[in-house]
Amino acid sequence: MARWLAFVTTLVVSAMLSLAHAKEAPPVAADPALEARMQKIAVELRCLVCQNQTIADSPAGLSDDLRREIREQLQSGATDEQVVQYMTDRYGDFIRYRPAVKGSTVALWVGPLVLLVGGIGVLVFALRRRARMAPDRFDPDAEDDEAAEGAR
Amino acid sequence: MKGSLRFIIPLVVFLVLAGFLAAGLKLDPRAVPSPLIGKPAPSFALPRLDDPNATVQRDTMLGKAWVLNVWASWCGPCRDEHPHIVAFAKTKQAPLIGLNYKDKRDDAQAWLKQLGNPYDLSLSDLDGRVGIDFGVYGVPETFVIDKSGVIRFKHVGPMTAEILQTRIVPLLKELNG
Image 1 (tube, rainbow over the protein chains, first blue to last red):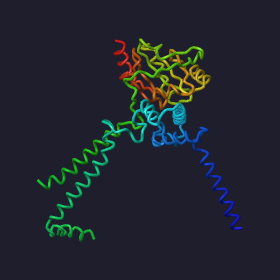
Image 2: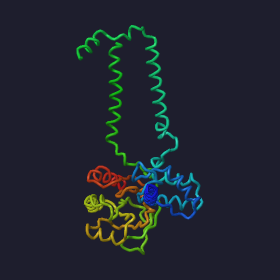
Image 3: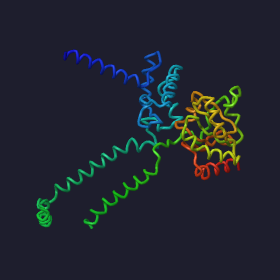
Image 4: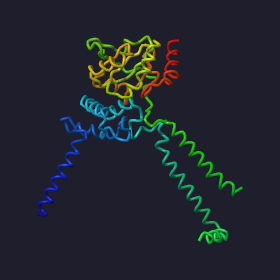
């Protein structure tokens, strides 16, 4: 009985999973190699309608069209770089999740590193200063003690 | 001195952060800067909405500044902006061409009949390819294109009286002057 139940549950769950899969944009190209290349490019491109999704994931009509465009360009012999360039020419650096490093995008690439190094710098500076302090500086202040007593 | 610095540094950090956040509030995260501004409009050859056998090309429009408004009957915000587009068309400042984006011909014509047709003519971009060339990602969009076919201005989203008055009308005056 229990076995049966487990079997039925597995069936139902897998059917549901495959349904969920069917709702994602289905690949329509007959050529799996081309489809794989299209997917590889599409996951690097931002959907402009739903901006936190990639063109590969997005169900928006525009993403459909852009996937079709990528497919057709690859079919006619374009390189991956040419396709990405085509998209950037029309929609700007914004369409790329990893935009090319240049003047207008350098803050994007270097900014986090600068913040990280700056933060570590401040931390090291503060810790070193503390290390040089006289030990009695770390004794609690009498005033604070009184305040703490009062709060109790 | 040391004591006051302890208060001033966090204050300065706070003010800088608040400044950035305040500026961020005013930015529209959905507005994507178009790389097409200052570049020649993409070439196109599209059938007219009212007469599928007649084709209009980009170069047909050379020699005068004109306005391209991307619209569709399925697009809700297009309905919102429609009165402003009609008002602009009445001023006859520039030819107003509609780009009927990914629409059905019948639906589009019914929409124009119902709401009024402000366009000198509309072009049918049935599969949205010309839209992609223009970098269209959210209908409605409006472009101003100059005499030599260069895109000078783009507005994404419904047209407003303010944008017409402060951006498009002055720009057309400059381009026609």
